[in-house]
Length: 489
Image (cartoon, rainbow, N blue to C red):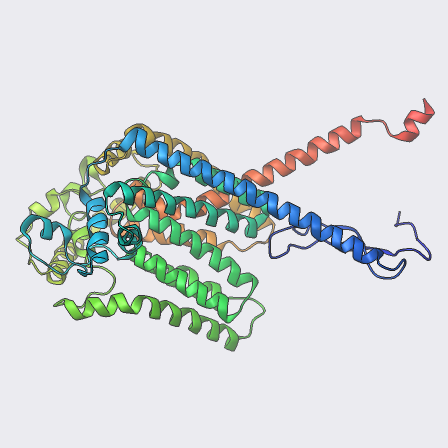
């Protein structure tokens, strides 16, 4: 039956409820909305009431998000002080910590290991700069201790929880955003690296931002959103050099294959994104080109990484697909100058790869299996101890990963059925997998893809919960006698 006519009073229309910029409410069908005509001022009262209810929902959503972020911060701080503190300052964490303090002191970008051991200032770019640049913020304020950097890194991890929530809301609605944030707050894959002071924290944060920026561009194809997408890509590259692959895997397809947009407009938006990204990374690239003997762009670390991952110890045996210092011990002495060392190690690794092409497919599969938790997962958890990850938490994270991967696969199916764009969520796992095949497989390389897995899992869980609630309501409605049945009795 249709809606009853109301003559001389107010007119009601069935109007679709669409998602607003704040994410409330999503399009779910039709509902009566009071519009125009009838009693003076009645329509305005109805619309004002609707806006008031919407503001309440937005406020409530943000309150829940704040609570979840505080939970995430609590989890990270408990992990820091219960398991890690005091933490030995060594390896990559030492690099990021010392580089941040040196940068804050205006001493540029030397090799902090060499500077500490010999006092020799040697130009270096073993890692891209963003992690240490962010850690330099508390250093500039006088908080230069490793603990201060650990705490600040935990705050960066909580920032990723917030970005995941906003992306989930944009992809599949407010409930999905909160579910995604809840998973990101407690899932070890999202916080194991934070108090360790690793670049994986920055990778998670920047990839979360890139995914959100990609969805924003799909909804609003403007110069501003294209520029933000390019800036997010630059941040990702300055956090993890291998993720420059996302320029080809995500940014170019998202902009270039946009439906309903003229080719000239697409080319313009792509040019804006590319120009913004180039301008953002240009100072670091120019700095490197001016101080090294050989051309270096984002990092001088590729050669070193390849050198410890391409040798008999990683092509055969128990460490298949991982890395080993034995690889370097079998090589001639490398040059001291960092760009020349990078070129030397790259040459040696490529020579070994060309001589053992028959093993490359097996090694590639093992590397992928290690990164995604399906090849010798318990051994990988034990190997992760070298990076100071508690083995119990690594094992817990591995078990949770398997559940999240299954849910993420279901989330892909849900979004395909809803005809929602998938590329922003699939691009980072694809780029991580490609990088893993080239270098080596390990748990922390997966970190940048964790936000995408969490978001896809949240889509599936929310869809399942909504379907269950619909069935329960239908069952309850069918089991409750209506007014006509009661009157007949």
